[in-house]
Image (cartoon, rainbow, N blue to C red):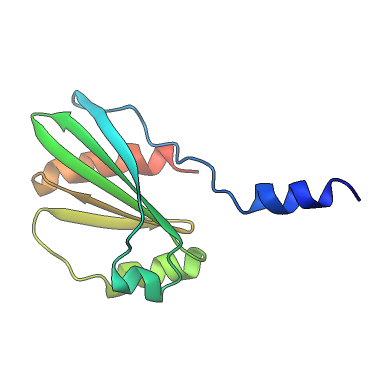
Length: 119
């Protein structure tokens, strides 16, 4: 009975995302921060939090990961997100991931490394 409050408290916290410190091609994570403000579409799909990581290499690549209410919500975000040049997005489980800041070929290569790092 004494453990119940601790279980409630610990379940409400989100574990840090396992974003890699380095990506193929010499990209090194320069910073990572929580995002308190979510885009309207992410909020509509049950978005709970966001994390932004900036990678430095031959320029900068920004990786934003949004935690959603579940896999279906993340998948629906992929269906509704508006494509833009220089950006790539995908979902893995309950996470919607947005990569931006490089050419499409580089983003495609980096996507594989990030997707493999996410649980």
